Image 1 (cartoon, rainbow, N blue to C red):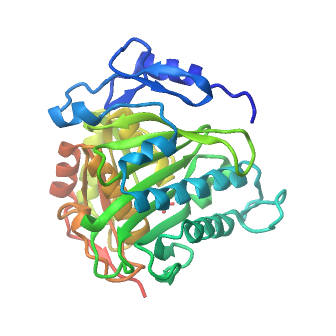
Image 2: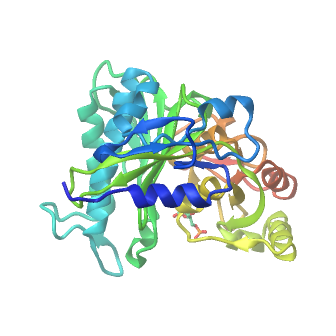
Length: 375
Ligand code: F6P
C-alpha cells in the first residue's frame, strides 16, 4: 500500500461545509470513530435544519466501507460490496485509458477493449462473484441476464454514463440500482433497495443510498493506484436539498419546441441562477447533494425525445435523491412511481429541491412524453 493519508481531506471537509453534507469534524466530540490507517477522528452533525430523525443518522463516520455496511441486511451488503469492488477497478481502467476522437481504450491493461465495454464486463464479473445476484441488466446489455440461480437481487446499471465526454477528461460515472427478486419488468422505483452514483473525477467517490439507513452517503476511494487495492471510507452524509439558484439544464435543444421548457430556462436566466452543467448526468446530479441545493432537468419535446433510461438512470438516481431529502419528477410526479415496462423505457426527468421540481411540473409538465418505450 502507498502511504496516502486521508487526514488532510478529513480536515478540509470539516472546516467549510454549510450545506446538507455532514462531514468529519475535529471540533466535535459527539463520536470518535476508528479510521483506516490508524487515524481517529471526531464526527459532527452539520445539517442546517435537521429533522429529529436525520439528527440521529446523518453522521459522516470515517468508517471503512466494510464496517459501515454492517448497518445493511447481510446479502444486500454483499451485493453492494461487489459493486464497490467493480467501481474500484473501473476507476483504474479510466485513469489509464487512452482516447482518440471515437472512443477510449484500455491499452495498458491485458484487455484491449473500449472502456465502456470493459466497465460493463468488470461489473458483471463482480456481481457474479458476489453470489447473491439473480439477474443483472446493463445499458450495454439491456436484457434480464440470469447470474446466480437462487440469488436474491436484480441489479441494473449504466457502466459508464457520459462515455461521449470521457475523451475530454470530464468526470464520468456509473449508476446502479438494486431491486429484490429476479425481474425488473413490472417493478417500479419503490422497489429499489439500494442505489448509487459513482463519480470518476479528480477524486473517485460513490454516493450510496441503501434500505435501513437514512439519507445518502458518500464514500471516497483512498487509492493506492492499482486495479484491486485501495479502500473506501465514509466521508459525508446528505440529508437535505435546500432551495438555491443552481441549474443544470439537459437536452436544451428541446426548448425549441417545448414552450414550457423555454419558460423554465427564462426563469433561470432572469433570476440569475448559476449554470453548472458538464453534460455528465452523474456529476451534474451529484452536485445537488454535495452543494445541498439546485436542480437538474432533462425534458423532452416532439423533436428532442426523452433520452434517459428509466431502469439504468432515472429510477436509481430518483431513489438516491429522494433518500437524501430531494425530489424527483417525470413531469407528473415522483419518478419512483414509474412502472418498468421494458428494460429500454425512457423518460424525461427533473431532480432537485422541492420548489424547483414543483416549478418543472408546472411549466414543463407532461405535455410532451412522460415515458417512452423503445423496442
Ligand atoms: O445518459 C445520457 C447523457 O450522456 C447524460 O449523462 C447527460 O446528462 C446527457 O446525456 C446529456 O445530454 P444533452 O447533451 O442533450 O444535454
